Figure 1 (tube, rainbow, N blue to C red):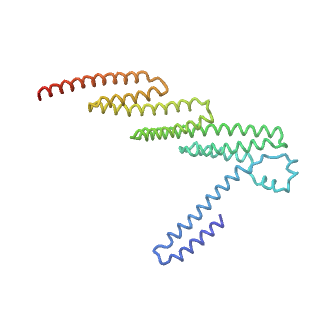
Figure 2: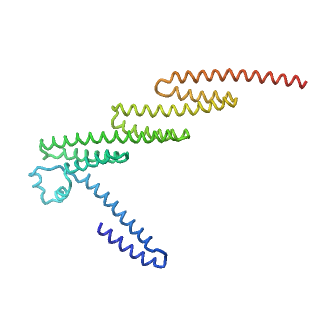
Length: 290
């Protein structure tokens, strides 16, 4: 970061000197220097996160530590955070995510829990790990698994709620369906990890019910418009499309399907009556012409 700050300052003064003929030369020079510092900060964040999840070894027994005291592996180990430190940091990130409404924070904590579990599982394969230390590592794993599940379920619930609300506010059918499908993808991702969760299953069923209701309402509205304009065949086709989505949907939609079936029968009767009236009118007109 010191090198990045020096490079940023040098770039600032160089650009300022080169752009002296321009108006406010310090503005582009400051922007360029800021970009350098932002890139350096982002790179530092990436490196620190990798170091946090990659170089973790549990506290080794003193005898094993003595064997490789002067090796490069031990030097890396001595600089790496312990599992207890990582767990404290993970719990801090968890509390911050719970205090925030942004779903992506819960997704990030879920991924960090996965990284911790992988490294803890790797530490269990150490041959010099004592039975007491092994129990400690497994207790940490159980704690992190609970955090992982909590944040996955919270992410899925918050994301699905936000996307469902977005779908309800959309005016066009395809926009409603697109937002609802994205909500279903979030729920399905959580179900892939925790298929036994009944809350997720109920949420998925509710979103699918919303999709079915939106489609049926769309086709019913088109059918009513066509019927109002006297286009009975078109109205019947629209009602059939609505009935198609009802028959494919989960749950009991018997009453709605029965109502649509009655509307179709009424439209058929109107169409038949309208055809008879038109035929009689045509015969009367031709008789008058003759």
